Amino acid sequence: MQYTGLSSLSLLRRLRKHLPAIFILIFTPIAVLAQAPADSAQPETKQAPAVAPPLDFSGVLFANYQYRGDAGVAKAFNKFDVERVYLTFRVSAGDNVSVRVTADVFQQTVSPNDTFYKGWVVRAKYAYLQYDIHKSPGWSALVRGGLLQNVVIDHIESFWPRWLALSPVERAGFFSSSDAGVAALVSFPNKLGEAYATIVNGPGYTSRETDRFKDYALRLTFTPFAQTNRLLLKTFGVTGWSYVGTVASSFAAGGPGEIGAIGSGMPRTRTGVFVGVKDPRLSVGLEMDTRRDATETGANTVASPRVEIDSTGRLSAAFASVKPFQLLTQTSTLPLGFVARWDHFKPNAATAGYVNSVIAGLTWDLNKQSAISFDYQEQVPHAGAIAPAPKTYFVHLVANF
Image 1 (spheres, rainbow, N blue to C red):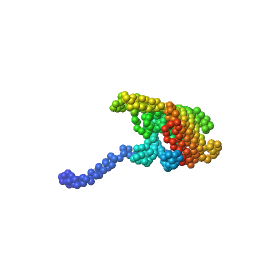
Image 2 (tube, rainbow, N blue to C red):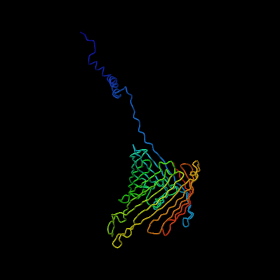
Image 3 (tube, rainbow, N blue to C red):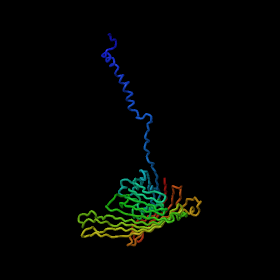
Image 4 (cartoon, one colour):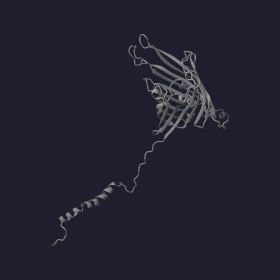
């Protein structure tokens, strides 16, 4: 029987010529199917990009023109000055956690730093993480860590216009307005007040930690009329505070010829009471504060032993900022105001010397966020007290943004 078909050998020879095309036809659909979703009936879903938390930015600008009216070398000295600018950034760091950073832009006036650069520099004033433990209309509690508000200065500045001058406690050098450490703030139910406690290094935000000691402070503020309908009484508050600190001896490290290293610290204790009312039409404050420090005499040697001498200083201050037309008539929008303040500081109760400071002037609100003032400030030492005696005429400007 005659076979007319192709032999297997000749068939393979013919197929070999077409193998590349055959592979493409077979494996291309397989590769496409392998890359397709397992369930082709469901459309592919794309994950939404992460959204960054909103950044809250605000700031305060303090500027002034000043003219010295006292006699001596500084007579008739005058200048335009941008005293400082605070730039504050707040941002959420997750549930119940937030971060605040406040940059302090100020002019370098401290020697020898101003020898290198006399212009404006930037440093951190506040830089802390805050965790809200509880937050409700009834009461709240939180903790902070970092560069944070010291015990009472920030509280007093809510009554006194900081853009005119430092608060009495800070001006008298009791402690810095900010320091590195931890703090807790608890607000009382029914807006009856708050408690604020801190543990800080001590030297303040302008210096690193310089010894092993820590400073402890507590402030209690009571607002007994917070629930009343009378606006002036609503913000009436009574504050008591205490600051217990320690500084190292200047002989802590010891040295050649000294009797030995002094490991114990010296007291740095402050206590005060503040009473005030803060209303847009009338802000009044009255405070009495004491401070206890120690100084050292001698060289800590056998011939010149170290002697620790305690000193107690006292500070009294009263201030008022009033807009008389708005106070007399609620419908008045005239933004004219009067400001006055008196400080009496006795650096050492064991000596006769004391320093009186006076601030008086007019204020005018340009709008709800900006204001200008024309004020006079004078500091006079008495009974042998060693302190500068400037008499300065100011034009102050503040702008909140």
